[in-house]
Image (tube, rainbow, N blue to C red; front, side, top):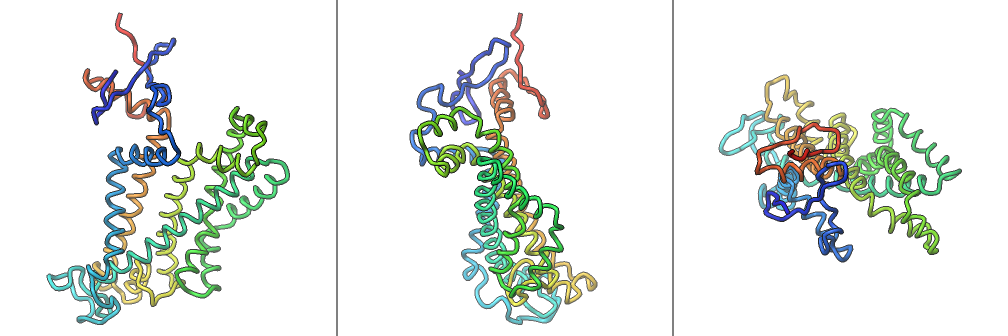
Length: 345
């Protein structure tokens, strides 16, 4: 038995080929959660035990709290004119003022609500559409797969930016419109990945057993197969959320959103219109851009951590490094083969 960094024992075994690998959780008796609910909590606990995931979650939690408590952090209307235009950051106005004399700090705080809300809504919508379309196409095959794959391919080959601009220009401006446009154009990538994985999963023994037992196709797809592809779906949702926040900011920067709404994108729009860059008023656009970058960085950390936990090769490499930690032996960080520990003598 070996100890991990959090002092929990990891049982290991040696294969006939001389490989040292950790035992599967269900082989140790009691390590696997007894119910699906406990499995979800166990997965979240394992994810947050990863340093990258914990740091990324802390950043997202900070932004979520800022959005929730915006009326407390920056009371008043963020659109009010409070001082002279393009005033540099000071003790009174931490992020300075805009080209119209509005408080940049208040706008950045209130803009967190709209930008994060759109990002999360689009991420969830894209994940749901991708799961339904991709897994349905992969499981049924035949004409169903042909039709759905054709739809996916059409969306994939159409340039995303012109399609986004066209839809946003002809639809009524607003937060829901932006969310609809981004979800409408962003789902095919995740659907294609899930379809490919489903083509392999439908040949597994547990799927055949479910078919023989008379389970419905819908139950097989979403109750039997989907739990084994949760990491892919969640990873796709994280990526879609980052895509949505960046695309929303881009559309609003072009003036295709509701410019009367305070968000990170409209902050950039007004900074450009008020010549913030030309006048050297960097404080009018740097805070919003930095917030977008930090949120994207946080979701990227969660994605990397999720890959480390769910990818058997990366997980085995990490756990064996923990096993060998006391002897100060480390495996190469970029090792691509299955880790092998040679026996002495």
